[in-house]
Amino acid sequence: MSYGIFPVWLHGLSIAWLALGAICAVVIVADEFRRPQKMWIMNLVSPLTALFGTFLWLAAYYAWGRNSPAAGDQNSDPAFPAMVLKGTSHWAPVAR
Image (cartoon, rainbow, N blue to C red; front, top):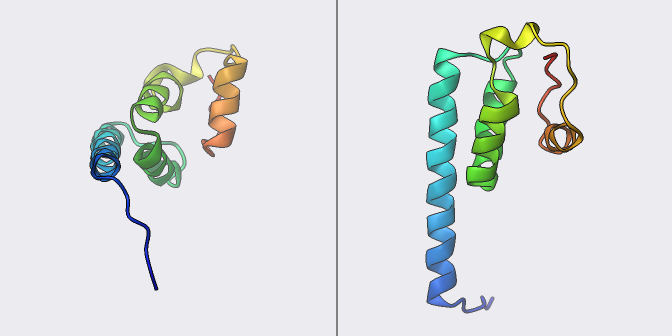
């Protein structure tokens, strides 16, 4: 079986992207130890999506996916882009 030859820069970029994803996932896991999600499965979903989404998913987690103590105080619906992001990344809808 023959495999394709990839450029060195692409291999380096792939390794860097994987490392950034792992760092973002560790940041989310550390935050979830302090603020666990209401559903246990979400403690797995958020870091797993950060593995491929890196900074975009880390920013989205802090903006919309984080379990904050005041989450039940607000009755407004999130913006449409936030609803789409939550749906496509399989985040559970959080009543805010």
